[in-house]
Image (tube, rainbow, N blue to C red):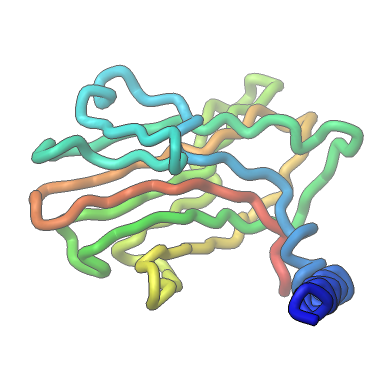
Length: 187
């Protein structure tokens, strides 16, 4: 009887997950994502970084202070669909245990370099964990920040990447980057 109950419960939960629009939207809502540990560490800041490939995170080693810069190339989003993506948001997943305090922080910038060389690389949109809108999970402390991308992303328009920066001026906290995502923006 226990086995049948477990099987029935598993079937109900699976059906609920597959049929629920909330679950379906979450699964289809991501255009691109990258875990922090797969981003490229800037060579001048790499000695400060603690890269955990098991969890996909990047933080500061021991008592190191300063900045850690990571470059996360955006690729593969235009395969089979050249866009344009005109309603996109940038979401950053991180831990910042001093919250709005300024001793630690996580910053992200979505950047573009035009293919036609008429314009150099530039910031499209920025996020800062100390000033931006942040939602934090009470049980885990994991936070997400989200900003709307103010322009259309188009494969013929340029190269895109996200630059992540971890900032730490005190050992009382240690920011941790988890990853970045491009998601459809719901108006």
